Amino acid sequence: MGKTEIQKLLNVMKRLRDPQKGCPWDKKQTIETIIPHTIEEVYEVAEQVYNKNFDKLKEELGDLLFQVIYISQIASEKKKFNFNDVVKTITSKMIARHPHVFKSKKFQNMKDFKLWWENSKNKEDISILDSIPVTLPALQEANKIQKKVASVGFEYKNNKEALNKVYEEIDELIIEIKHNNKKRIKEELGDLIFATLDVSRKLKLDPEIILKKSNKKFKTRWKKLEKYIKKENFNLNKISINEYNKIWQKVKKD
Image 1: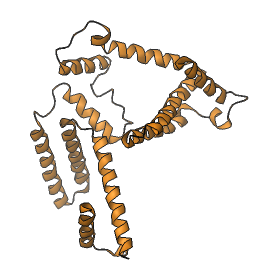
Image 2: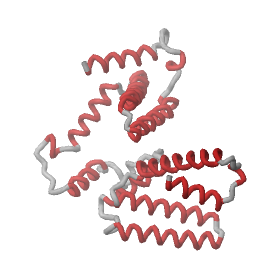
Image 3: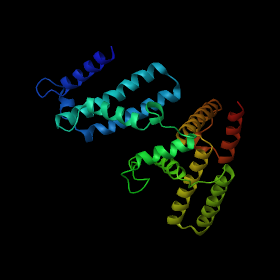
Image 4: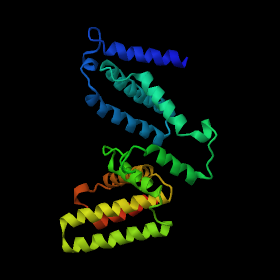
């Protein structure tokens, strides 16, 4: 069934791009115009993972797969590659990068495997950081940078050292705020965020996931706060920060 269904989807894509009978919108798309839609689909997949909604996740994964087929179709029209080439490339890559599964290579532990994994990916790169796309969201880019340098031993020995770096960056930020140096404030604030993300990595926590959960928690509490304010007939724009804090503490307890 798999091959049949994939072929059916490939045929749908080819029909949508048909110069005579295709969809007017689909026919005029380029790889560049499709990319924003592809990025959007990735975030929609992530949302359903966080929500644990598997029915919607199945649908969103289909949308993401369609984006891969869409780009492959355009590339095929340009005689660059097709969907089968994409599948062959990723299959070969995964087999080559897992010699302990598909061949007889042995690793002593997970650290040895991770070091070998990074080396296998970086053979053609001048720097171990060259393979990190600059188009990644800053949060993901920072996390990847920290993982890369940690894989070759550039990291703190323990969680306490990583936390101490956060305290150090806070102190440096406080100094620049006192001096009101806008340029240095931005620089030190960036360093503080970067150091905080490194703590997350040391604790083996995905910063994207934990920040998403914090966002969700804050939004839930804020909506409760709004309901409370509405119930008490308060004016949202005329509440002092002290009153806000009192209501916020009440909402947290509830």
